[in-house]
Each structure stands twice: as structure tokens, then as C-alpha cells.
Length: 454
Image (cartoon, rainbow, N blue to C red; front, top):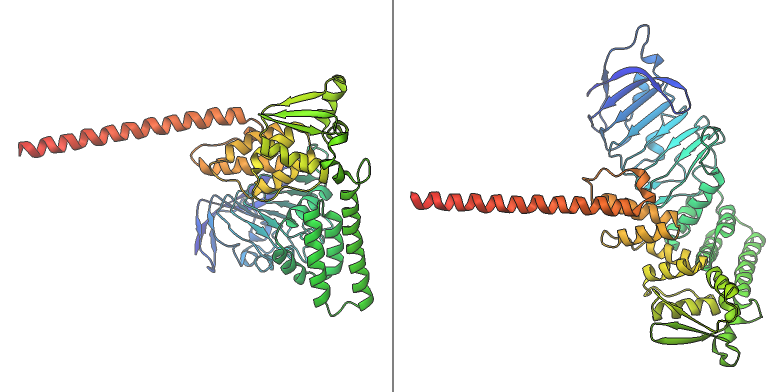
């Protein structure tokens, strides 16, 4: 298959230049031998090509055999080219790569073994794909990694750089934490399937336990741990017992913290009407509560009580009775709401009261419930109450709903601007549709009139 290309130096982000082969707007067929047609710069040959770049092409799979034409490749870039998946076998011939760039594609999943054996890889870009799952051990063997960008994906919003000029980047550990935490929100089957592939599932389970930030995650890890231990023949009985005890202790410790609070067993206070000293009015219903407990769980209420110590009641607006009942139950018992809760309202109310754990739980549930219909409401609230992961996923859902609008990434922080632009776009589309309907009616009248004359 003949591929038209350009040869020349391409500047890189931190000042480096690479002599590259660039291909634009072409269909790259799978399993085809590629013959590159283009003129080299003076005194340059295929041996001097250190990078190859596919831009705005149709690339269903990472092209094979590129090193046959360009034996000294250091960079492989597939940009905005509809690439849907990438796996270890796709990269097996590119072990000497220093840079892998696959941004603005449709990749949903990155396997943990993707970069096994890549000793020289130092630059990775997967921003603005559709990544929902990244297996947690994927970057463990990349000792020379200097730049990593997975921003703008539905479930990932971070990037890392060791270069001083990139002063807004996060640490590599923060990215790994986000990947691990997001992975642990999957079901037990997904986690177990992954663990069966890794070299040391026991060590990985220990890491999972450390990264589990809430009871649901720890429970999932505990269940998977016991399953893995039962199936792992290689581990000694002593090691299995040690792991079981370790995880059980962690769960028991967490339960202890849930059951004990500022004054021992707080759960008992929820039904203790004699010691309740404050009233909260929500719509038409009045709640008797413990002022100290509300202050301990909500910084907003704590500030209100501090500034108005003589006040004995409070009227909460913009919070429904059923949502406030869920909030009170969490404040007293640390029990999370069930799946039938309106998590959009819960997120807004917990955000308003700055009850962070409850807000983050609601956000986690909303991540799985974003639709074209509710994406804008979620986008506005996630901006208002500062939840990046939810904000990015909602913004991307809005972008996919209106593909004709060229959204600017800076609009992620500006829901008012997005609302204005979307509304103007909708009015424009409605006006166009109205004109088209009128034109169709005129044409039909004309045809009918013409027929009557004949």
C-alpha cells in the first residue's frame, strides 16, 4: 500500500527536534505492507528517520512493520486518527521507542502489560481519548518516564512532567493513585481478572488495600483477596493466613472508626431526643438534632454556629426533606445512601454543606450515571463544588452531544459560557430547521400548483 508522506524536522514540546515521516488524512489499512512515498531532505535517508506521525488519518490498529522502513524509530505518534485500542502485541517491534503519542483517539482501555520491556520510553501522551480503565501496574517498569499526559479522558484528568517549564503538572504518584482508585471502583470480576494476570497478585492486593479510600472499596478488595488466596497454590499457608489477618484487621479497624466518634458510639445519639439541642427546618418538616455533631461534620454549619452562638434553629433552603434525611443518617451513622438516592441532589446538598466524604461518594455514583440529558446540570454543579473528575466527564459528554461545536478545553471551568454557546447553537439549529421546513412547504406547494396546471 502506497502512503504519501512528508519528511522533515518536527519541533518537540521541550525544544527537541526529530527528523520525522509525517502522514496526514489517509486511510491506513490493517495488515498491509506500507510503502512510503515522499522526498527526503538533502543527505537524509530512511535510516535518519527517528519519528513517524499519523495525523487525522483512519488508523484502526497500530501499523505493523514500520521498523522495516525506518529501523531507528524513537517516536510513534498517532494523532486524532480514530485508533480504538492498543495492546502489548501492537508495540512488540517498537521496544526502542522513547516517545509514544496517541492523543485525541477513541481508546477506552490500557492493559497493565502494555509497556513491558520498554527500557527507553520517557514520553507518553493519551490525552482526550475515552479511557475508562487503566490497569494499575502499567507504568511500574518505566524508570525513565519524564512526561505522562492522560488529561481530558472521561475518568482521568492529570498529567505529569519532570521538566521545570511545566509548572502545573501533578506528581507521577498522584496519577498512579488516581488510576488505582478509579480501577478499584470496578466490579470484583474486573479486579480479579486483572490480578490473575500480574506476576505477584499478593503484593498488588497489598497496594490495593492501601489505596482503598472508602468502605466499599476495602470490602471489594477483601472479597477478591480471599478468592485469590484460595486459588493461589504458590503461596504458603502461613503467607495466606498473614494476608487474611492483615485485611481482616483493616476492615475491623475501619468499622471501629465508623462506630466510634466524638463521644463514643454516635449511632446511639440519632434516637436520643432528650439531648438534642437544635432545630433544623427543611421545607415543612422540622428536625431535632445535636448541634455539636452537625458542626463536627459540616464546616459550613460549624461557621454558622460560631457566628451565631445564640441561635437555636436554622432554616435550610434548596435542600429537600428526603436528601436531608440521608445527610443526617450519614452524619450520625456514617452509613452511605442506597442506590435509589437522587445522587445529583445529594452531591449538590453535600457540596453546599461541605461534607466532603458524602459529596465524593455522590460524585462517584454520578460518574456512572452521566447522560446527554443530565450532563449540563452535573457540569455546573461539579464546577460549583469543585470536583474535577466529574467536571471533565460531564464536559466531555456535552462535547459528544454537540459534535458540531468546536469546544475550547478552557471552557471546562466556565459553565456559563458553555450554556450561552450551546443555547445559541440550539437556536441556530432550530432556525435552520424552521427555514428548511418552510422551504419544503413552498416546494410542495409549487409542485402541487404545477401539477394542477398540467
